[in-house]
Length: 65
Image (cartoon, rainbow, N blue to C red; front, side, top):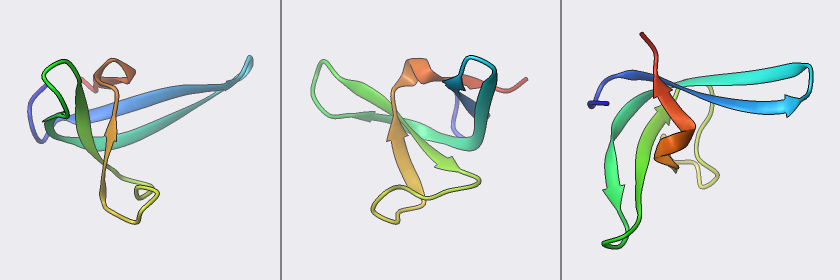
């Protein structure tokens, strides 16, 4: 994954309905030497604090080919 890549976050809402969110990958953020997360600018929402960029676990997103 590199900055500028289109990524998606797939969240299972119920057994028969999935919600897919798309965003632009900004980069990796390190909080401690052991924890890293991805920073993403989501196309359809803002972070809870109103920021355009929010953090998400790296393993919950994937690059859209």
